Length: 504
Image 1 (spheres, one colour):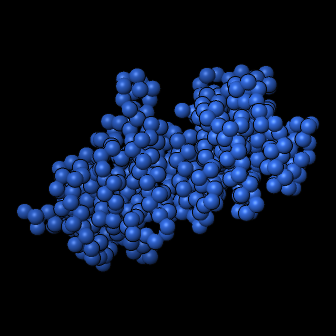
Image 2 (cartoon, rainbow, N blue to C red; image 1 turned 90 degrees about the horizontal axis):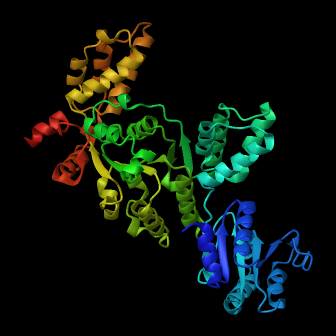
Image 3 (cartoon, rainbow, N blue to C red; image 1 turned 90 degrees about the vertical axis):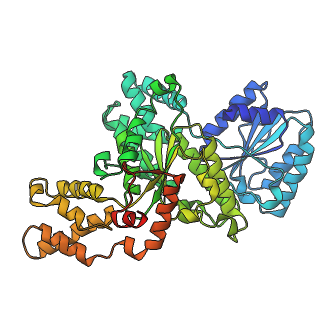
C-alpha cells in the first residue's frame, strides 16, 4: 500500500492525530492536498510557529507564535466541518504539558468529527504520554515514476528533448534524492550549459553522495574492486556470478525474485569485506555501507527513527548493495542490554525487514564471531545463503599472492616463486599475505632496490598470524561450518592446511 492509499484510509477511519516524519514538507503537503480533493475537497489548514495559520483568509495569522491557540482553533469550528490541519515542526512543542494534554483531549473529541491533525517533523520525537494517540506514517522518497515525471516537466520547460536512454539514466541516478534536491541539481546543470547532457549524470550522483553523507547513517562507497581481485573462494564467486543478471527486468519476467543477500561468516582478514565491494562493482550497483552503531541515538524513539530512515533510503536507492560490516559486534547480546529495549527494537525492525523486504536491496553482512549473533539472524529467509570464509589453503594462497604481485609487479611476476611463497605461509589469511608483501616492499625500498622473494619470506617469518593467536576461536568456526550450518566458500571444501591435518 502506497502513502496516498494508507493516508486516505486513516483519514476515512477518523484517525485524529497522524505524525509524518519527513524533510519534504512541500511534496508531502501537495500529497495531502491531493488526498483532500479525492475525499470531496476537504479543507486543508496549514500552521507554523512564525506565521500561524495561512493560505486561508478566514484564519490568517491565528495561533502566530502560539501553538496552544492553534490547537484551540479546531474547537471553534463546527463539529461537522471537515478539515485537515497540518502543523509544521510541531515536535518541538510536544514536551509542553499544556500541548500534550490538549492533543490528548483533541484525540478524544475528534474521533467523531471529520477533522484530522497532521504533525510534520524531520524526525520522530514522540513523548511517552503521546505514543497511544499518535499514529506514525512513513512518507517514502519519490518513486522512479515521480522522478521521471519531474525530470520531464523540467526538461519540457526548456524546450529540450531527451532520449529515453538518457532519461532512464537520470532517473536511476536520482533515485534516493528528494524532489527538491533533484530540481536543484538539474537547475545547476541548466544554468551551467543551458541543457541536460549525459555528463550531468555524474553531478546527480555526487548530489546523491552528499545527501547520503548528510544522513550520517549510510556511507556511499565508490567500489572499484573486481571479482578477479579475490583470491580463491571459488564456490562463493560461482554463486555470485550465477546471480549477476538477477536484478534485470528479464529476471522478473522469468519469475525470479530479487536476491535477498548474503551472510559471510569467518576469520578476520579472509576477504569478506573485499567480497562486498566486488559484488557491487561486478553487478554495477551502488554500494552503501551501514555502521549499525550510527543507528543508536540518545533521544527516545531516535534509534527506531534512524532505522526506518536507513531502510527507506536503501530501498529508495535500490537496486543497490547494502554492506553491513561486523554485524556480530552490533547485535551481540541483544537480549541482555540495559538500554530499555532499544537494541531489541532496532534488531527486531531490522530482521523483520530482512525477512519481508520486496525491494532489490542486496544485503551483504559480515561476521567474525558466530557465537555473538542472535539465532534469529541465522534463520532461513533472512539471507539467501550463509557462507563460511576460512583461512586459504595452499592453492588459494597461490591465487592471493598472484593477485597482489600482479598488481604491484606485473612485469616481474616471473621473478617470484608463487608456489614456494604459498607453501611457506600455511597459517596466513589474505590480509596477512598482503601485509607481508607490503613489509617486503619496505625492506627493498629502504635499501634502494626492488623487493625479492627472500624479502617476502623474511617478512613472513617475523609475522605471527591470527591462526596461532586465536586458534581456539578459529577451530570453533571451522567445526561450526563443517557441521553443515553454512556453505564453504572454497571450492574443495578444505580448511587451512595445518588445521585440516588435525581433523584427519
